[in-house]
Image 1 (cartoon, helix red, strand yellow):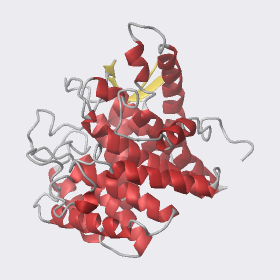
Image 2: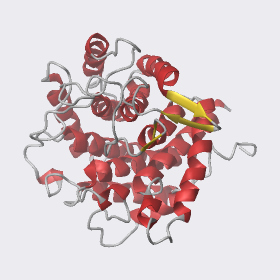
Image 3: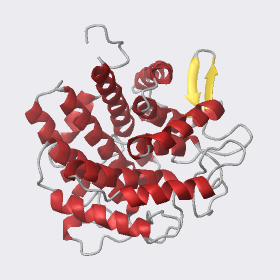
Image 4: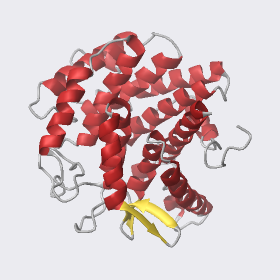
Length: 357
């Protein structure tokens, strides 16, 4: 790949992720690791999401053979162990010691992705836990009339994007083990989404299935980017349809900058921990997540536009690291979650382009 564009395979985030996964005496994520911890000590679930994206990126890089196989395997094992750590696990202990996995769908969706990536590259060491989590998520999803598993105890809110991630994690188990546990669930979930969750004006999927938030029935950029990425694996036609609508209604191109709206232009919504800052209508979270969505959809044009818009911003934010008053902001777009998402997207699109050569 001597003529590959620079935006496809620089893998600059790998060194940072490697350093984190090789760090001795891990005792949970810190404010240096995740921007959100400066405001929410528990990290808003971004710790397990960062590890999930790291695992996917490492799996992609293993397939690309750009790093020594032994090193990739060691890092994947470290990602699993950090995901099981009592400072990341919502059970406050290793999930293997828990009898009832309960209503922790958000954590389990990402843990299951990490375990699936590990098995795809390394071995069956964690297959027992992977199988148990997979079956739990299948049962929890099918037990609900809306096909959305509970995400947290005592929390009614359920984002369809998280259910897409749950189904993807089950699909990944199927790919690794020759099973078909995701088939019925994915079929019924898509039918439910098409019948109940389409925005009547745009055809885009709404965000939250229980109706507990003002924005529940609104399409949101961060949710759609997340949902379409995971759907691209187990429901590619759904992903293609939603991606086309997402670009039509929420992609902004202005003064050489490209990004996705967090909300439709007709709706006034505010910043949330999921969206990140919203600047001129463009959602930081929506645009960052859409980078790996564009990669999974093999949409080189949008990927290039987003990458070209995001990379200079990240470099600028890093340059603020030594400015006392605003140095905390320097981690935005450059913390472990953002770095892992970017590495996941870069490795994914590079893998796609290589397969087409």
